[in-house]
Length: 177
Image 1 (cartoon, one colour):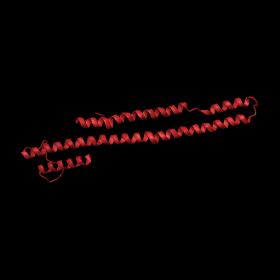
Image 2 (cartoon, rainbow, N blue to C red):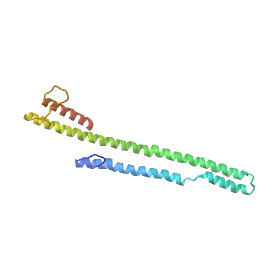
Image 3 (tube, one colour):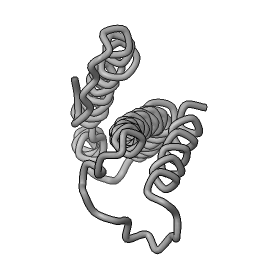
Image 4 (cartoon, rainbow, N blue to C red):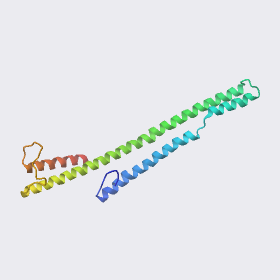
């Protein structure tokens, strides 16, 4: 289905596709749009330093003495440059705080969901194996592996298989909560 998660139950698979995979795709699109917005801000916000120097030269052309009009234009454009720089910084900070960080948190939570699904699948496999061992031992046959436990416990094979099944089921139920 997505990123190393295989789901066989059709209802659960559909729910996963809608609530995780589709949301992941939308979040990636929003992230791309945020990056494009930052690039547009850089491109479309004017660099006024060079404009200020040119306008000052033009205003001083008549008198060549650093007239008040030239100084005023240069000061206004310098103030505008500072305002534009502040606006760029605020835009970038707000995008980071209000868009990119929540996206990152959501994607991390989706990775946690994937990890829990994988863990649940492993536990289901272990439980199935333990059930098969219990069934074989109750019939009097040798376990599927045919080997004694290396766990160091001094239990009978049937008790050990039942204990392993209980542990796996307990861990699975803890994940389900």
